[in-house]
Amino acid sequence: MVNSGKKGEKFLIKPIDTDALQLKNRLVMPPMATAKSSENNTVGKELLEYYDEKSKGGYFSLIIVEHSYVSEEGRVKDSQLSVSRDNDIDGLSRLAEVIHNNGSKCVMQINHAGGQVSCKNSVEPVSPSGILVSPGEIEPRSMTERDIQKVINDFAKAAVRVKKAGFDGVEIHSAHGYLLNQFYSPLTNKRKDSYGGSILNRIRIHLDIIKLIKEQTGDDFPILLRLGASDYMAGGTKIEDSIIAAAEFKKAGICILDISGGLCRYNPKELSGQGYFSPLTQAIKQAVNIPVILTGGITEPEAAEALLSSKKADLIGVGRAVYNDSDWAHRAIEACLS
Ligand SMILES: Cc1cc2nc3c(=O)[nH]c(=O)nc-3n(C[C@H](O)[C@H](O)[C@H](O)COP(=O)(O)O)c2cc1C
Image (cartoon, rainbow, N blue to C red; front, side):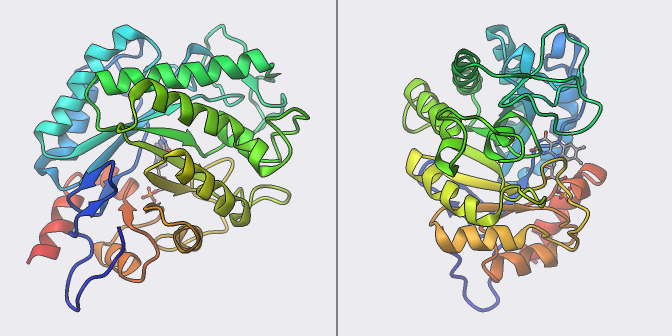
């Protein structure tokens, strides 16, 4: 898992072995919500066609499927994909099959929106301390210990469904201001119990979730975690917190850290350039021996290659460039091979 290429060697096409997950190259399609789920938030033709088109040729070693909700009260939008019911497994297995048939591995991102709910379901939104992340949301209720236990169970049950559907792993979403990011950030977590306060308390729910997923899916089922590694807001989380958290996540059994940032969105306005979160990924990579994915602003294969060769990250996620051009990964990999 360490970059050690010879002169002239292309890093983008180097395999990586994380023990739990073997990947044939360094190119990852990051999770991107499509709003293409079918009736009742299930996998249907439109979603299958979308992922077939994006994974065609197997140029991505890994496709991380868009955030899918673990429970009704954790649903963000009406159109979001569900992993919250056992009868979702059949549809999810068709999705995994389409991606596998094209030659890529796939991981499902599982999420709970916490206070950031914008759909019109009748469930009351909950959050660590009843604090709004952005104006205009419905005011959430502060979570009880019982609510926290339910969330931990819901994440684990969703991970079991993801495994049963044939995915190669699961990614826990703790970025972009959703529930686990709300626990992580001191701006939205003012709890006085063991789930608030110190950094170790603010990641207690994450560690409880990882432990239960491991118990219920077995030690060899890969678990990734997307971490909003800096809020970029006064009083919010900083890279120093994330270095501590990363070490704890590695100890708990996370096999890859997928780094993002920004409490409200994935593209904080003060950041720009290709790989704008690279100061975060580089710092985590240097401090903790765990493979990291860097996503954000990357539109050119040469930039991806430079970020890998300068050890800013182990894997590169390309989102919007691929959303807009399904041939992007093909061109990038062919350019490395020629
Ligand atoms: C339409 C869209 C939907 C997104 N949905 C998700 C999501 O479901 N989960 C997530 O962690 N990030 C999501 N993101 C953020 C992307 O994964 C990625 O971090 C972001 O687009 C920055 O990378 P890029 O500059 O390569 O696009 C989404 C981004 C876009 C543009």
